[in-house]
Image (cartoon, rainbow, N blue to C red; front, side):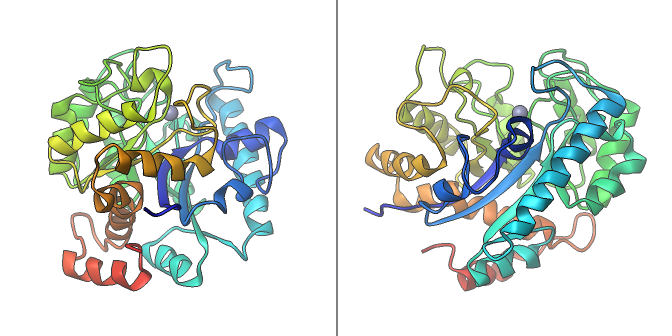
Length: 342
Ligand SMILES: [Zn+2]
């Protein structure tokens, strides 16, 4: 069996954690650094910016949240500049293909909590200019756009305008953290596939942050993507989680028809309780092996750890107009070219 795995992960909080703890990307005591990354076969990571609370967990709004966002993203840009020989900031499908051809790690940026732009659809262009390719509508608080999984309200008129403008700009809508009502309101108006970047199955672990079977199937019908989360309370109600819990969520989603729509959103550096045997990013190798030893097909594991997300990002970011996507055979050719199946 293979010892190293290609990994494409949809959500981590490492970029903000670097600023909060005053550490560098190259080597740190967080879940993700470049040394841990080097243990993987390959690594493409969406680095998320959640700047709606401070380092003590207190809520930040308005100018304070915006100031934190600018501070954190500027800091991460300087870190990227130090490692441009090994890492490539990806805004487009071509960037991702180039990164793969050059043997560099792909780096995507996303936003969690649009309070940092005042929830203003008119400021989504600024996010795009900063390289943000995906955004949620909320974190755990309700805001001008929608209710969260904790508060329950649906999508507001401003929320609808926000979704429409984001999709016009080619920014992916991430429904993790959202209320179920707002989720269905988005499905009513969405013109593009949607993503739940870091959410598990509510049928396996009944938590409001997780997706119902109906939500998951709807995301699949939209040709969207769901990333499995490693945070213990989203995996199990037991005191500790294991790799078997991760496999149970994955197998349930696959039974619902999700084999091409399942990926990873491990929430690393955003969660303090991980499954037994998982300390940091390098343990993705151990998890991949455990999934195969637990009975999952190796190609299925490679698809969920890397290929499904690679295909989705290539397809979504290569779109020329709303609703227009590349044909599957062209995508397959490009994927073969960059060898994500090895
Ligand atoms: Zn989150």
